[in-house]
Length: 634
Image (tube, rainbow, N blue to C red; front, side, top):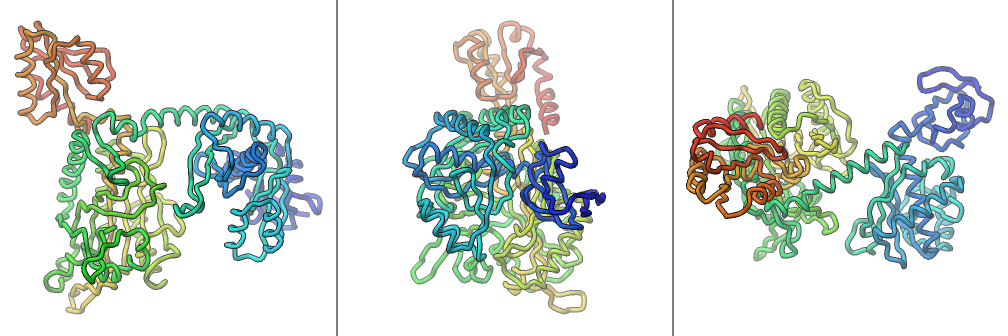
């Protein structure tokens, strides 16, 4: 029979052949993990039919690597079953950079147990056990897993709408799974997988459910790729904002206020520098600042749709007979600001308003993560009210502003995702069609190279997500831009067109860095706490070498402070090596050392963070020197 390979090349193969037979015929069976037949991923055992379009999937393909990782998660579960035959298994998906498996066990596993589990997994891999798949009706599947006392699997089966479900087996381990999987455990490279951590996880992410154990791991096609990844993980841990933030007096997280931040002295400096810089840029782009209330009435949130679509994430407060909500978003408040006064003219549009708005969202305790995921955070939020024919120019303006601001913070590698309509949304499909087409046209006009992020739009409109890549190659989603035809209509806001007719404006939601708290976390990890000179909370440490140089050190420090540099003065009677080490640990970019020679010559000696070299310049040149350094670091 004739089938077609991915490049549309015809290939003649015997009748009743499988994808594995095809791989053998070509001679690449050791590299192939699965198959894509007519756009659907399948196991290699799947039989081919005439005219099929076939792509043989290897571990160099993204979908192949995901299949390898999902299969390794099954092997992890099989190893746990051999250690604890009474273990109950929940889910074990492939995730970005690896996999995990959630389970309930009589044994409490710790990080110290991972090596022992890895040895079990290695043994399973070497046994080269086949992954076998079968499909059974739901009632039979319930009985099948009931006999194995797998209660979580039964709950999953009951939530599936189809009449039959898929099951995969590795020897005595059975898993509810639609696959596909690698042909056998032997396809997993024994020197290229690693279990990385142990955590707790609520069943189905709900704190009312059982707390399960979760083991994370990863697997790569080769030992070299694994080593590169593990090195990156090691570097990531050294840069962890949860470690560096408290060490550098930036922030503190306390059980007294879960999901909230206590900003320390240095953190407040960074926070305000970011706000000041963004304020300067948005004013240049003709935005004006507003401030909206924290508590607003239920009726407002009902009109916006948040009460119906987002209430589970809102903090609700009762005020006499009224229900109030602490704002999770700033947009309804900005619509109230728009509505003040008379109906606007088309000549007034676009209206660009912005707010550093403090928002609260009721995140589960398990989802909280340092300052990256909080219950209270400040957004650099902005909304543009414009006519439909202004969408493209306003999108271009936002994109220009985003790129300028990201570059200032050292981010030039930016990816864009186009997120279309989610399942849970407000508005008609006709309105969504117009909104998505308008945003896509604007994104194309802006020259954005975007990928489609299916179903991940806001509940009121499609959005662009701007993803920054840090120095370790990690992605951080920060900025967003949404086109919204729904909220203006729901709030009945208008402008008059040139013919005197009332029209509904388009609302463009935009955030540049998103949560300031989260962005500071990203900056801490990207720079490993060594902020560029312009952003460092303390820019210069001035240290005296001897008692004779104390007065001169004070003079230098005051001169720099008068020029608005953030300085630290150290005139303590300590060895200079001790002082330099202390400032280096605090990541202070520049250290000035003054002794007898500097006093007599009216000079300063400068040592930069991370360098053993020093340079000596005249005191009169110091302010210009550091101003130049500030400009270079921007």
